[in-house]
Amino acid sequence: MGKRRRVAERGNKRPAVVGGVIAVVVAGAGLGGYALYGGGGAAAQDGSAAARKPAVRTGPLSATEVTTAARAFLTAWQQGKVAEAAAATDDPAAAGALLTGWTKDARVTGATLTAAPRAGAKVPFAVKGTVTFGKASKPVAYDSALTVVRRAKDGKPLVGWHASVVHPDLADGDTLVTGEAGDPPVKALDRDGGELTAKKYPSLGTVLDGLREKYGKKAGGTAGVELRVVRGKASKAKKASDKTLLELSEGTPGTVRTTLSPSLQAAAEKQVASAARASVVVTRASTGEILAVANSNPNFNTAFQGSLAPGSTMKVITSSLLIEKDLASANKAHPCPKYFSYGGWKFQNDDKFEIKGGTFKASFARSCNTAFISQAGKLDDDSLTKQAQQVFGLSSNNWAIGVPTFDGAVPVQSAAQKAAELIGQGGVRMNPLNMASVAATVKSGTFHQPYLVAPSVDGRSLAKAPRTMSADTLSQLRELMNYTAAHGTAAEPMAGLGPDYGAKTGSAEVDGQKQPNGWFTAYRGDLAAAGVVQQGGHGSESAGPIVAALLRAGA
Image (cartoon, rainbow, N blue to C red; front, top):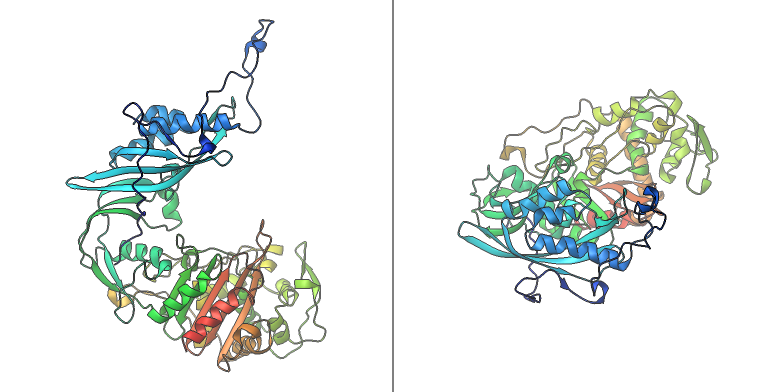
């Protein structure tokens, strides 16, 4: 329906009322029996100033401290005592501003807050209220949570303030507003004219938000009245769209047709649902049309806006560079030692393997890191950056697909970081849309900027790449990807999809993760696709089956 996601209404259970008003409804024993805590120790006997100074509380918070702090905040908030509620947090200024806006801007009245059993210092709670604007009025209900922390200067337990306390969809700096919708609704259609909804395709919630923001006013619709999240500077810097939480009165939607294939979109939704933190994109290589986009997490469009190290899938771009500069050739001998040191770092291959007397094609197919690292000293610091920008159309922040995207980043680096970028680590950042475009560029021979809405709809210009690869470089690059799909690390998921195919696997190490992110990019016929499974391990085992399944589905 082109509408943004809404908060589901809760049941009709009413909290208990004591003395006409409710402080906080206690649900379960975890918050049971709020009790005031004492001063913490006997009075000093010597009368000195140092002895009279109260000790700073330290150590873990007790159950009493957590429940007392939570009760003070929730009770004051519910009773509309903004200054008192704000003072019960560790950031009274920010809390006061957002809690004032709760009634003034979001227009929520009659709020009741129902506390659930605490989990350590965290206290979940349910929110119910009524949103009113003019003659339009609707109930609103959702779940949130707060965490109690100690104030550094005296150890006093207070609510650790973040905007998400007021509503879980708020990031710090965001606000809640009820009024005429900033953008009219849109009715988004697939390439066949069928309606796209978040209910039918859960991954499209953020995409539909972006379409409404971009085309709501251009598509001929009229705005309704809604409660929505208005993004602040920090969220806008991340290209996050405003979000509708509750629609009080419907607007009239305009119509926007997309390039999405209903069958491939349904298949993509099914594939990412089978893996945690998975994202995938399918495009038409010859045109750049986006045929499917899906994410396991419906709340963030990692497929379009993610910024992740792509691991060895970056070797597609690096290989094109090495071949162009006569530093590698598909069927010529190429070193693949166990280790290679550059810029003060010692690099190694997965499981410390080596290939003795092998070709560059063998190194690419098996994803030999040292085969690429060994060439770093023969490249300028900006060589890889220029290759990504000038041939593959990446890292220039100029894509216009119809909704917000991150267009990849290949910053100029030196020494060890330059070497790391050659294998998709260091400062390189990509997402499945970027890597699907890389596979499409290899398949088609030239960069076609991906797009979700045809440029003819609004007259926008698509990004161009300044140059193309030579015929010889392109032929060798296709040979490398084809050999990898048939005999290399991508062979298992790509089995049965040949002969007109190519692929590259990747695993990207991430600090703090036990398992690397698994990547896979491939083409078959005129389809190009890429996917990532965060903390999925090897790309052939995690993202590979997802991408291959969609290439089969699109046959």
